[in-house]
Structure formats: structure tokens, C-alpha cells
Amino acid sequence: MDVQERAIADLLTQPEDRHLAFVRANTRPGDLAQTLAAMANGSGGTVVIGMRGRQVEGVADADAARTMVLDAALACTPPLVLPLPAVVTCNGATLLVVTVPSGLPHVYSVNGTYLRREGPTNAPLPPDMLRHLLIERGETSWDRMTPANATLADLDPDKIAAYARRVGPIAEADPLAFLVRRGCLVQRTDPAKGTPDLIPTNAGLLLFGIEVERWFPQAEVTLVRYQGREMSDEFLREDIRDTLPETARRAERWIVEHMRRGSRMVGLEREDWTQFPLGAVREALINALAHRDYTIRGDSIRIMLFSDRLECYSPGRLPGHVTVHNLVDERFSRNETLVQALADLGLIERLGYGIDRMLRQMADAGLPPPEFRETAAGFMVTLYGHTGDDRADAGGADVAAWRRMGLNERQIAALLFLAAHQRITNRDMQELTPDVSAETLRRDLADLVERGLLLRVGDKRGAYYILK
Image (tube, rainbow, N blue to C red; front, side, top):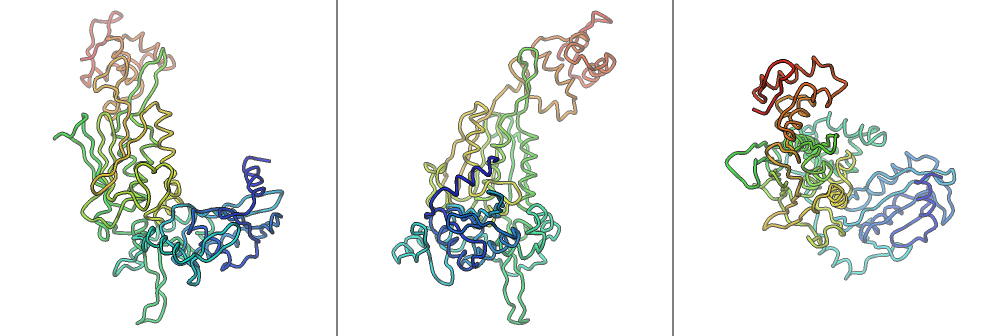
């Protein structure tokens, strides 16, 4: 029995309660919708499909069962956006495990009835609890709204096809129907034509739009790199306006290219380092894209890279009941459709669990934990990184500029050796890279002299090189 089977076996030993439900494979979508809505109105839960009480029956057609789950989620009002059900095996039988995340932003009903879980059953929400929940969770989220005059032609079919391929057969079978289930499209009947049209939501345009800037000029990421620890007149800047997945990829590439990177000698071995753990940088960036308040116009996500830290600012204060003090433990999604689509693409953990990973990665790198701070109109994440030194020295060196110059790894190793020992000879180079021919190493050093980085001192066998 592998790890997954053991986890499922352990789950099946637990009694049904407000966080766990067992249902049969032939359950009706309407009945399943009630259980999903009841869990969503609470703190989430897990539904295992293919059970008869505590007895494992299994699911005959996993794809059909997955479709039934998505149809049940769509039957909720507003439509419930869930991670794709996981197909697992237990005692040779196939089961579907449906996860209802905690911290969802809406209050969900089925056929006009608002439900909650009372132990292992679904029950109507009492009026006072419903009133409290409606106040706490608010109205329809911005990402599910439809902008005026938007049509299906405003979406890029190639981006939709790429997304469907990433999700798999359940999306590839009918990509547009899947986008309806995901909240990226809504179906409306045109009174003039009397036929249904598919209309993109704000989320659909942000994820797959042809001209994102036309619809959302505020959906911009500004990246700035300063040389020192404070803002100055000398900086590098790039502004990115694109779909969210492409913005994420372009911004990450820019940060990786411009963050401090270096190497240090540990004994006889060279140890490479980056200013920040790449995973922590990615989490800060993607969380800003997924959770910012897109109703705020005239402000953008700003990422500022300093010699000692990275600051990631996103417009909009923390949503719902989340505060700086409970951020690690609580879950609330301002833009659930965006979050789930980015999770489908593998860019984000569902509902912000990346905060935990960001903390762990910073700790593993021996760095301080991230700082989280609310500003007057937004939210700031600060990562403090390895500082190195703007000048090469024996303890560490920032080699990003050398790499941008096109120096190879042998030449960088030579410069690091010079930082520690002030001079280098052909013999030193051969000891650093014994598998490379002497002629290649000679050309490497000659190239560094030609570039004006080194000076050659002496002739023939007595020659050595120093930093210019």
C-alpha cells in the first residue's frame, strides 16, 4: 500500500461530520450540490464519492463522475469553483475525492436554500447565521462579473487551448464548457437573437484576453531594481501588461535575471547563491497577482528590488476576516476564479497555502521570515535576502553583472579566485578546472584581458594576472 492509499484508508476510518461526507457513485448532482454548498458555507471539507456508508463501492467511470461533480458545483448559486476531484484507489476500487476549500468568498445556495453542515447531514442555515454570513462574506466578487460589451471574440483561443491541455481530458473535451464551470465565462441569452451567448467574465479576460490593457489598465506589474538599499535616480525598470499567466512568467524571469547572484569558495568548492529563494519570490509574485483588489484603478502591483531586500506591493488591503496577525492560519480568497485557474496552471497553491511554503523556504535558506504589512491602500510583502557585497571579495561576490557580460563559468571562477587571492596563474586555472585543456584556459584569460577586467604581469612561465 503506497502513501496515497494509506492516506485514503486512514480517511475512510473517520466518521462523517461537518468536514467529511461519503456519497455513492450514483448520487444525484442536486444532492451532491447541497453537500458542496453546505461545506462551502462553513470552513470547507472533503467529499469521498464511491462509498455506501463506510463500505467502499467504487466508481465505475471516473471521468463521468468528475463531470457530475463539476455539474453539481455549477448548480450552486453562485457557481462553486473547486479544484479538480482527485481519482484515487482503495482496496482495488476507484474513488473520487472532492476538496471544498476553506475561506471561500461567497454564501452559496441550491435552489434558493442556504445550507450548512450539522454533523454528518445538511441543514438549512438559520436566519441569524445566514445574515451574519452574508455580512461577513459580502457580494459577488469582481472576478465573476462581466464587463460591458465583452464577447467571446475578446479571448485568445490559443491561450484557452493551452489551458485546457494543462488541465487534461476533462477540459479538452469541451474547453468553453469547462470555462463556464470555472467562472471564466457565463451563458446569457441575447433578447434580440433569442440564442444563448458565452460572455467572458473579468477573470476570463485577465486570464485569456487578447487585449488585457484595454479592459484593465490597472492590471500592470512594475518592476524596479535599485543598486543600493534605498531608492535613487539610478534604476532599471520594466512594466508588464499581459494576461496573468504570462505576466507571472515574464515578471519571474525579470526578477531572477536582476536579483543578486553570486558564488563563494567553501574550502576548495565553489558554492553558488541567490539573493532570495526562488520559490519564495514566486509565491510573493503570484499571490499579489491572484489576490490584489482589481477594483482599484490607477494603481498597480509594484516589485522593488534592492541590494538587501525585495518589496512586493499589491493594491487592496487584506480581504474578509484575514489580518496581518492571522494571515498564516486563515484563508479567504478575494478572487476565487483567478486563484483556481492559476492553480490549474500550476502557478499557485489553492487559497494561499503558499504563505506557509514561503515561510519555510526563507527559513531553509537561513533568512529572516517575510514581513507582512498593510498600508493605507494596499498590502506589502518584504523578503530580506543574502546581501553579498557589491565588490568581489573572499566571502562572496555578486556575479550577476559578469553573467550579463557573457562570461563563462570558468572565467567567473577565475575572477572569484582573484577576489580571494589577488592574483592567478595558468597553473591556478588548470587546478580550478582540470578537465579543460590548457589552450582553452589560456583563451579564457586572454579574453578577460581584452575585456579590460584583468592585467597580465610578466612573460611566459612567470606570468600572472591581477584585477585591473
